[in-house]
Image 1: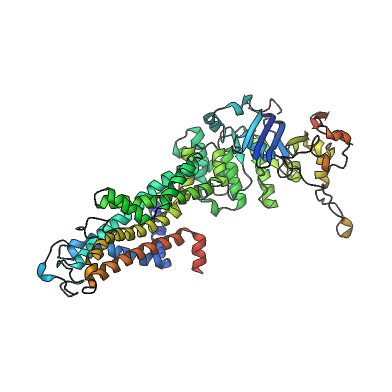
Image 2: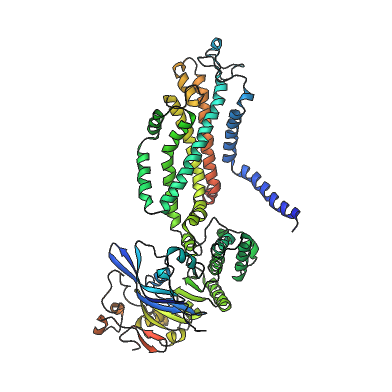
Length: 293
Length: 327
């Protein structure tokens, strides 16, 4: 077979499928558009706005939205649009890191718990213990133990999320473990590590991807709560929670300072949740078929 | 072809610890299978035929199950004494196994070729490319059309019969000496069933694999087996060459099984009458009756049946455990 024929055969269906994907799953398209815009604003913030999010301008305090300041200015004369899009960097960084870290830890611990009998009760009781403490309280407690920084916020939000992933993975592993194909794999002499990587992990992946998006959304929100409560990222860092918290005293005078970061926060969470729902429908063919009709 | 047995089970006892006490799922069962021979193991659900097979593979879930005593000899080597690593080298390599449910015995997220490759790579230390070639070759052996294309497909793209073929390909990919087929055709419809049995027989003729065929279907036994072991409530009640068993069943249970099969030559319509059945129920394995376990359901039961009947050879190769065998 020549190289040319192989190439056309591989490339063509891929393109067709991708185009079909976008029109067939409007929810994913919409979510991707929304998140793409937010991410684009955050990443290219220095090129989009001329204002530095940290520079004070005493003469420009509490200006309403205008051509010069699209989202107005805050009590220190800082440009709110600039602060809001720079704030997106923090939120996204936290959302993605928390989702990645909690999924990673949760998968490893959950799979071990599900596969190794004596480890299971230990893992589950620790998870139960962690889950019995409200996430926000646990995060505040963890934050009060350490110096405020983005990294500590990520860790403080990850810890309460991990047990949720562990429980999900463990329950999936328990179901998969009883499937005949697992017994068939054991009957053909497969070892436990290989069994877990090759036969269990791929079956766990789909619900995990979906769960990761929900964790991402809840991490973004939790970061905002923490910022609002003054237990989040350092106050000089422009995160959405921080901006809202700082400006809440002037909310009647300058609504825009609270509203715009709030809208961005809502849009981001909406986008991530929509993506999660869309991906779930995409990856679960039975559900997708039902919804399609 | 009947040289020394490939697989020999001696006085195997497997028990399960349940809330209702100890269930003696397999209680002193012995049988053997020779090279190139098919041994049929027949009995109703819960008679211990599958647990015997799982015990051979040492796959009985522990807890609650436990192999209490006995020996499982593969070419004279006791599998029950091997460590776990050595046992893994036996599974899939020297003993292959096919399960009842072809719909769920294949991993849905791996291509079928991949799954066969896994087994080959595991035991034969082949480079990836050769393992892939072997997978295609196995698919061809089990007569799957377009094996190259099928190897890249996922289980949900195959029909039940195709999947069972893949399972057979997987079980045979390392040229095992013994193939244990646990109800391989129960979940398939009759035409496919015949095809699969035919396939198993063909492959056996080519490779000389010893086969233990577990089923509750006497029709399948008559078609395929050379020798038959009849099990009831964890015990072997009769063993005979297949023709002898069908011509002159000795144990009342075996006879009961045979008359309860619908016959093609029986008259149609109202004069057909009711299909005979074996009255009563299989006893609970944790509360077995004393003596012969079939006695409470047996039409021929007498006082003597309160004592355990020994296995007695009535004809060459034909043994039965019944005080009133052949009456």
